[in-house]
Length: 259
Image 1 (spheres, rainbow, N blue to C red):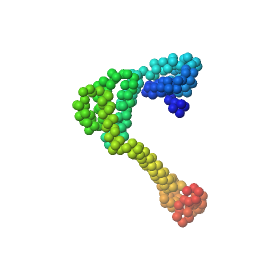
Image 2: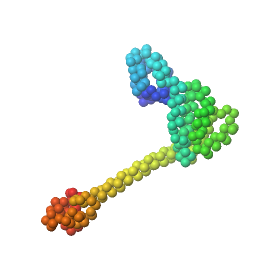
Image 3: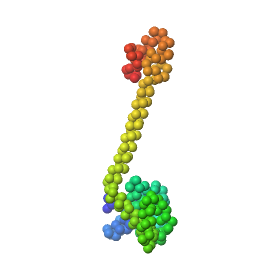
Image 4: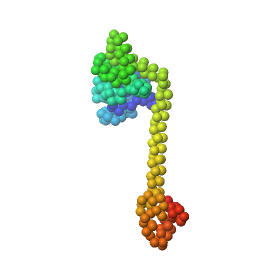
């Protein structure tokens, strides 16, 4: 049971999975309030734990704790509103990136699943939401939905989700999920390599620039004999510069530890 533990931090979209797991395991394993008290102490995190922390002391408080959690974090309308807001913020799926269509389809299925599981079937009839989700689709796929929609006797989010699932399945047939994953991973790695190469090149350029800086005037003199300050020195001062800065006596370039 420890490996199958589902945590709940107070995010409304986490509630359906958490409460379903908690109730099903309570029934199948015949957990008592004492067992469930220990489980709640381990499963609750963040805001959810803060809301009932002081009540996680007595087994008899378990039913009341669950009711409080449902009132504060498990209201179906709040859960649906959160899911809808998240999908609104998602970038529109692109026809040239099949993984975005698959991701969008899963998000729509998730919303419809929560509406059906919570008994709020009225939300499935929301024409504004259906229109909004449809408008996020690329125009060619939107036309396909228009053709499919004409065959339906009832138009709501439920058949839209089923139709979109078929589109996503077609995308998976053309590009299997492991191939899509490899493309995404390859893109990320190539971006990392490009960034590394750019940094390496910039470092080399900077290194070359630092190497060319004159040790006397800090300009880009390629050798000391091209420095106006050096040329104006007397012979003794020139020799002192050459010895002090490890300048090559033939090439008049800086060598040694200070290079």
